[in-house]
Length: 193
Image (tube, rainbow, N blue to C red):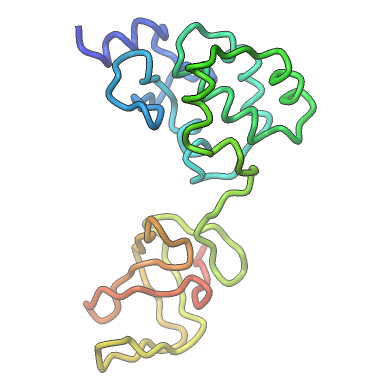
């Protein structure tokens, strides 16, 4: 049986953290990826985006951890422990952490990435007004920009459609101006509605 089929069967075709039934994907729990069903869980896009810090933490969504933390699957225990730590400002999360038990090996795995030490702050791509930018959005330049290595000057007011987020730098996006793909600093953009 394939790993995905095993996870579907184990989870009852639901997110193993929140119980959602749509947009489910396999997720390897770092740093032990490829260890099979113990280190891989089936989660929804909402959980994944917040785990990976691609969306703001929604503490109401994560109240599901009070149930998920009792799972016998080590990968689910690790994710629950990490997310409870990120939400430790919430009294229910602290109470859950006080009740939660991980064996020594699982606790070492949970602490390995250091993600639990970080707070719930999420680094997102934001325009000059603080609006969250997503792949495919259109933005307007709020300043004329000279493009390095080119004679192109991107004028203030230029609309850049179908932007792409630079994955490892929340201050940069990519977009085409006059057919040329350039990197643009998010602080010089305003999201179009």
